[in-house]
Length: 203
Image (tube, rainbow, N blue to C red; front, side, top):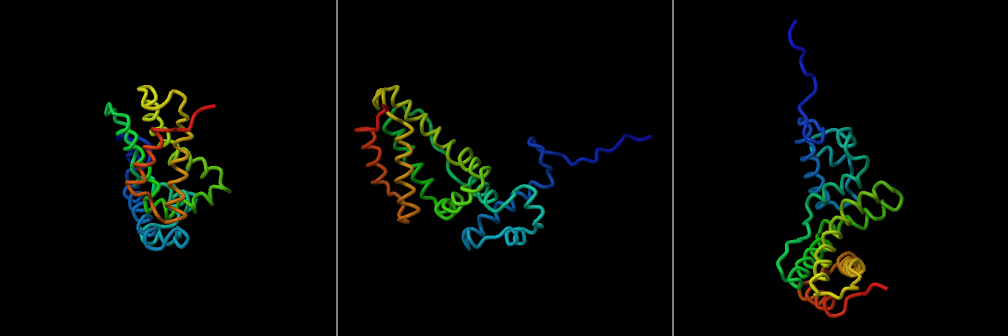
C-alpha cells in the first residue's frame, strides 16, 4: 500500500494556506485602490471582491466587515516610528514628530480614520484592534525616544511623556482631519522646540 498523501496545502508560519496568500495581497491592494477612488463610505465588500477577482466569501473568511479589512489594508502602508539612537535627543525627537505628522497627515488616514473611529464606537473588537495595532505600537515607540531624552537630561525628569504625545496627536489629527491642513515642517519644528522648552509635567 502506497504512502498516504498529505491532503493539506503547504502553510506559512501563521498557518494560512499558501494558495490563499496571493489572493490576500490582491484583496488588500484592491481595497487601497478602491478607497482612494471612491472613499470609505462608498466602498463595499462586494465591490472590492469583484475588482480583486474573488468571491465575497473569500473576503469574509479573513475580515468580518469593511472596517476590519480597511484597517488591515491601511496599516500595512503606514510608516513606522524611528527609534534609532543618534546620541542627539533633539534630532531624535524631531524625527519622531515628523513621523507622527506624516502618519496622521497621510491621505489614507485622513480618509478612513474618522469612519473607523465611528465604527469602533459600537464594535469593541474593532476598537481593540484600532488601539493595539495602529495607535499603541507607534505611541510606545515614540515614548521610547522621549524616555531616552529624559534619561539624558534633554527633558526634565518629571516630563509626562504620554501626555506630550497625546497633545501632539490631538493637534495633528485636528489639523489633518478637521482642517484638512496637515502640519508642515516648520510647525513640527515648533512643536519640538516647545516640548524641549516646557513639556507637560507629571503631578
